[in-house]
Length: 227
Image (cartoon, rainbow, N blue to C red; front, side):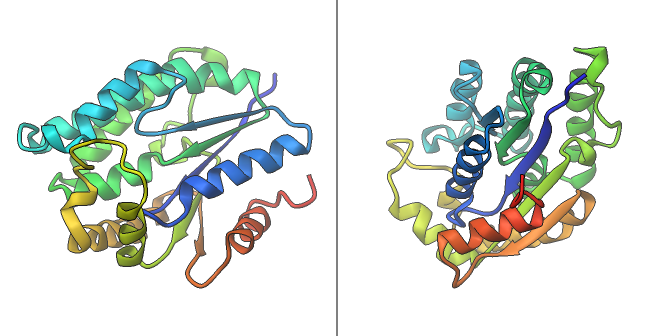
């Protein structure tokens, strides 16, 4: 039975992750493969997750959210996404390409003050629950092996945050995470550097490279140039 190859692109704000996710999706589709393009936290494929994304990231709610409550929203999004989008997609598509995932959850969640053991436990619970949806597509019991491959796009976090802040804003009140500033984003990057080792990760440095150069690096790392 067919099972999609599940690839997740990661990185801090403004590093070009969303652009490269789209480029990878377009490239694989151009080769005749069926591809699901999705994202966390929040995907149009599951509208409720977009509502929860707003509660999680819209700055107007920032003072009301507690440290664990933001993380519970993140995991609620992931649970819905996995069970209603990813699991059904594994048998329908050749590839699933995702913008952000569990590595971001660890890196941002820890920078927000949550303990890694807490983040790992609740992520594992969500993945375990999703694994029971379809017995033909049980996930690897190790949470960090949910994805076949993780591509970590690594760049200057300060410059990336500036690029993200200058782009069109999703929320009128601003993005609660972007508003935490450079020191927060530097800590996110340090966390991502450390936790990327837990996944099947290829790290690609993006500074001083064109969009196409990074795209070619991704294809090379994923061995997709000749598909």
